Image (cartoon, rainbow, N blue to C red):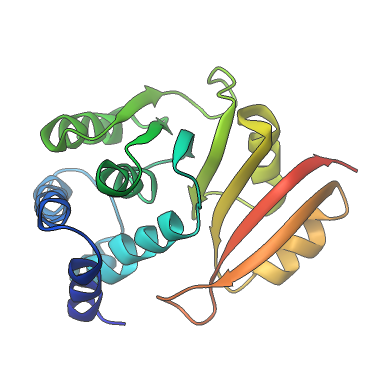
Length: 208
């Protein structure tokens, strides 16, 4: 799905107010991108497909109406801040925490969160140093191997929580490798934006 189609798909599935917020988000990202490398410059022409729709589908797979959502390695806010904007309309009882170690990216996140009125707290910290979060949902995108992500989940996800990890073409090998160290339930959901990618829904994470 190209950028224009992705944009229209999102427009058709959210309120006008939510779409306006996401549009302002995209505009601010492009403006800040000139000074700070928020995302790969090669993805800017397909911003709506590569980043916004990719985050939109993570929210669609969360299946919660209330609780604490923690996004780790948030970068420019994908998927965490997009999900926070969507939650304002669709699940206003979810509260969000975004953890990012880069101070400049956190400045962007705080600015856009304030501008959009999104229900998100920004923590500037390495993931392994941030206080344990007791998250109901833990999300991450293009961050680390599944084995490493499970270490983060062990610290930040409550036992009954679910991790939503966006993964590319190596996801099957990552699952196999992780199962050597971790017991977990795994559900793979095919990505709408890349036929080789999936969203992994991971639960019951514990060391083997």
